[in-house]
Length: 297
Length: 281
Image (cartoon, rainbow over all chains, first blue to last red; front, side, top):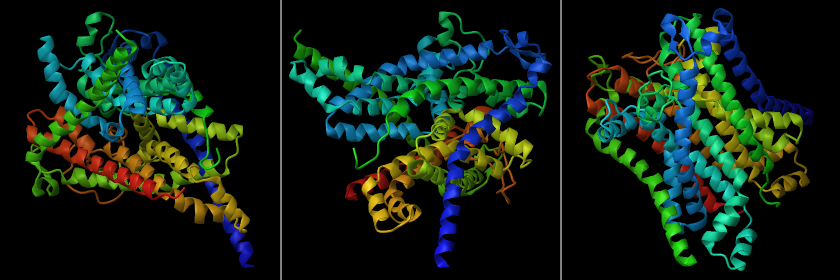
């Protein structure tokens, strides 16, 4: 009697756990469904050519997303160009070279960086970095694409460093021993054996860092100046730019629910969702290949 | 140049890169602590903002952030830990499990502002919760879910397989093994993951922009269906939307937010290192 009750309890608990696990798929679908529900109708209200235009002036019915899309891409790629060498070098230093005491200082600090809220970094960017950028450049404003990229680079660094470090960690010790045994220096072993062996993990690290950068909202909105212009010339680095995320954040509060502008902002959300989905899909491949359980190896 | 010299220069450059990464972190924290400390006193923390936020304290924003974090915890802890138990203990390697993993990876990658849009669409408008603590907590909870699932799963997986087989061999059921053996062993790791997830939720602005945050509301919320101020949004507002804002209030608010988040971070780190040292396996 007692036993059957317990068996039922366990059955119920295990069923709930299964539902919880599988519900994550439902949540992703739900998010996509709601973005589509709110955003898709705009394509029946506004001709497609309007979206593929270079002018984003919602109050005049112009919804060209190109400057926003390029703005996001511009800031993201600049950020990654800064963060990739810094991040990989730091990961190599922490995993391969640094003495223990240095590692004990570096790793918690990098974790702290990951925890600093983006609005705080944005605030720091506005009040500390932007005035210095303006001074150095003699530009009318320090709120530029470059300022944004700099802040974004540091926001994606914790992701890049920790994933790259895991990738280096997964390279067997025998690879390093073999490199040293044939007479290579540690430096040569690192760059010709260990890093190439960890390449796919490092690519994952960069992809994830990129996903983080492209989706970042508050810091970018606070430091890039938010002018919706096409970043096509070289001087665009030092002029204001506007990203997709900042556009949603800045304008959604003021639009009427259900208006064309409201739906256009959701359409940008769809675009962001799809872009980050594919970035993560690419990054995920490498994640799926390594799974292990403690104890039995 | 000999190979040894190349190596020495190379290592120095790597160290330089690490310093370049770390110094700005110290600069950010140092700058905000030094300039913010002047604003911090008991009154700043416990009184309402006055005079269009240009004077007074940040009490409602602080309370709002605590309530939102609490609301997030209530929803995402059971869901996240349950999901992690499923993945670590029950799921076999089928297409369904792979789909779940893919879903989690993607949830983790969805931009926070898109969570904000989703929360607006589903909780605020479709379910008619309005801009409310409830809608904001649910939005933040869904955003935090992947963090908690993946850190908890890692903690559960780290428990050696032998622990489970021993529990089986003593006649325990699978659930008994999980509840009495595996979960307690993995608990420190799970708690660390939960804190790390919640500190992210506490510091986020984008998901609460359209789901909870009140621009200026100098009173405390009375029900889960009320709007509230919140620290991150408050910092955004007073540093970009209010002209002529006194600097010390901006820095003070930034410092309080930073302190909330960093203290959670330190607690998580301490728990992890304490139990890692004590662990027998």
